[in-house]
Image 1: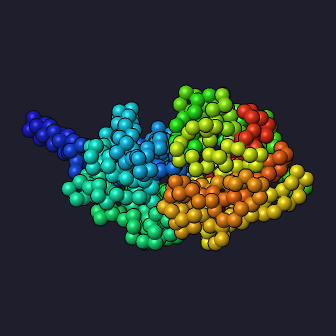
Image 2 (image 1 turned 90 degrees about the vertical axis):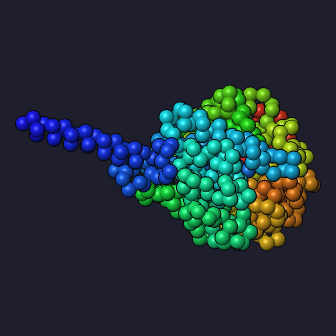
Length: 497
């Protein structure tokens, strides 16, 4: 009996020893483990246990809402809000007008250090887009990032191939994924191989533009599988559900600079289409006020026949009122970003537009999409203008060969990220072709000399992007603070197929 007891004791000790070895070997975040791999063959934990906190790093001229659809899909596939970390990086520019990669990399390090400290996780995963890829490269190569990062997904990246560790652009122990197009991303300049890295899992998504590489269902599926080792269950956001409340968490920020604006009031206004084809603003919706860092939260629903206007007004006349027209929400959002144009000062990047933006009785409008580059040859963007009686006063095709965005940087290939419509020369007539502003064109912001009449409060303009319609009202760009007919329009498409 004593001999049997001794054998059982020895077996128990051996079981504990090998169990400890297996446990250590399966730990994704063990600092001494050379391969922090969430799909280690010895790992028998659930998929949820393989989900790390994720840091999202956007590119130049972007903000956290670049990743809205990606984060919404991650939440629908088991990630928690605490694991989703999409923040704004202020515009770091050097004297040459290029992204200051060193400052951006330091900001990435700060985000990761804070997240590992608060979450208790030793490692995080990263998604980087555009120039954000350079910042992550620099962080990994020079600021000790490889000790705190497990997996990096570069989606539509702009690389600096000189940033390496001993010549390696994918330094271990991290693992890497790249998502590139077949030359249709303007950053590729026609090179179907640009965006791939030696040592990475390189994936090509056919016919994707730069934004789609970080927002499409196909891109999400690749990133999710790379991070977790499994295919996502939910790959598409649901259609809007009228009457259902949606939570909108976001931030009021300076246009271009991304600095937070405190004390701004955000009011939700429904835009309803009448039987005669005209549109009506339905006031009385919920409102919120941004905190010291610009953050706010509100809950709202939509009706079957409406889209949304978010009226944003600062506590003092530091910025113009902004009328942000957007599609009805499909899901709760953690990353809504409401951009305001400063009345004076602001980013030096706006100086080329200063006179046109801040004078005149015409209206100014900025059109963009969160998930879709505006691309001539693929997309159709139409501005339909009406007088106060609802009668047409002329449509303008905004993506044509003759009226294509000026070339330069991300504007090459007749595509643009932000499209500014304004009476640039203030002659109250439509001009011909784009207005060249090289400082902004190189970042994919282009402008058109189009008259948007704001002499009356009920002039309307309807924007149609690939059959998606958002109706707006024209507001005077030189209107007084808090005026009923003042401010800028931002037309924000979010779910372009």
